[in-house]
Length: 374
Ligand SMILES: NC(=O)c1ccc[n+]([C@@H]2O[C@H](COP(=O)([O-])OP(=O)(O)OC[C@H]3O[C@@H](n4cnc5c(N)ncnc54)[C@H](O)[C@@H]3O)[C@@H](O)[C@H]2O)c1
Image (tube, rainbow, N blue to C red):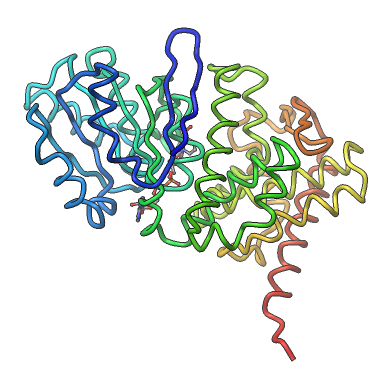
């Protein structure tokens, strides 16, 4: 089992990664002297697979505890769900001395985290991520939030957890598409960290998808370590934390254009390819380095076909939350692995070049996957 520390000015906390980490929960609550009245918000699918395991773990826990399950869909990140949580907390007489435990992916963590940050001006929260995305990304850094008026994560707060427990066992039941989605963020870290991690991810994609324990533990630990170090240096997202948005400006446009019929991590993978092509167009990358770097995102077989995707549509969607076409987008681009450049502007022709080449390369790759062996 590995421990990573997120070091913040006013509140530091550990992330514990490993198979069986869940069994450390009560010990950690006690040793860290946290509140002992537990309100457990749990993803319905996680409850289906692990509900009896989780409940039996708490069998001998004598303090107050209540389970509340939610459906992990974007619609649940809403005021409606939030009100339900506040109401139950009040009805069941939970007070400031409550520890809210979130067990699930990013949807559960974002909603439960926001409830914890606002109920009685803030109660303690612990995250137990059960998706790859949540293990490497959403459970770390304290961002919480809900969606509102079709805007994603538009209402939210920063509320750091008391600790994060990443038990790799939970990934056994995670659907492959969710693993692919999580890998999009892992691939992003491969570009933002160093060559060793890039090499590891590049060589282990299939093994990660097959849930090889050792490689998963290594990849999750290294990813979480990297995110923790960025968050430690830039808690409230000033310039440094912006590197975590590598590929994301494009990714959000893919999600909007495809009306969310693409997983976030798949969109991030496509977005990273766009960012690589734009980096080349802006002369941050040579053609040789571009060819070397783009091989990694192209290795991940996206489930969502991009055959019908119109580059102009993606371009238009990039400005969906800007007031007019004259507003500039600040791109995060790359010179080399671990060498990111933030706040880069680009012309329409350069952006379209990048989108078109990224889509073409993905489509070409997926066609090659279908070529039967002779
Ligand atoms: N706060 C942040 O910093 C941050 C960062 C990235 C993403 N997010 C948010 O995270 C959300 C996406 O989260 P996600 O990708 O983790 O997925 P998710 O929470 O949407 O869950 C995806 C699916 O997997 C199921 N599931 C979860 N764990 C499972 C398990 N162990 N076994 C079987 N099924 C399981 C869920 O029920 C759901 O059907 C988005 O709302 C996004 O905005 C937040």
